[in-house]
Length: 203
Image (cartoon, rainbow, N blue to C red; front, side):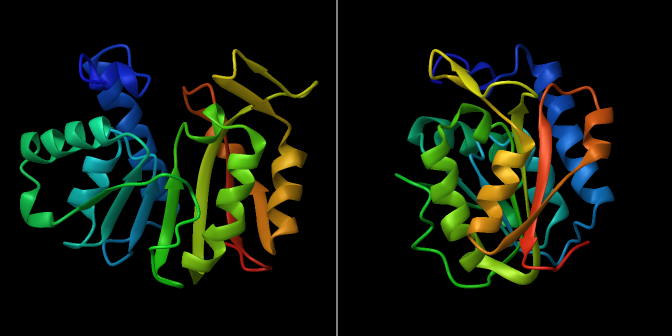
């Protein structure tokens, strides 16, 4: 992370970093993200997509969390680089995904890009256990993951591959509704996306 924050979040160069961030932003913008929304980004990294969200949202409406303090230092550098200080983004290190320090029903949008693709199932379940509490009644949670149609597996406990039905069922176990986002598959990114909402609510 200290040597190359862009590489630490999976971007081989600055051009790819910018392109992937734009893809994330454009997709959410086309799927209902509005300036007045309050957004929580899980695994915000060095703000590959986050700086665009910060610029779009009203001041103080972006909250980024990450397990790596070093990547959050790099996120601060991105805030400076993009002249976003007056947007007052919140950047907070976390030890887990219980989200216990965040308020109930506060966030309209929760976003996790390239987080669950590196997470064992207990970590994903921890997030799904608690995210509903912080999600506004009509809010949604978008996350990407590495999809497999065959046997679920991992590569060196770094890259984890899941079936859609596994994650949908896990969300439903915790009172959430999950649906596979087919149109995300059309974009030039190797991961898949699921959107989670409260109960029967949908967008």
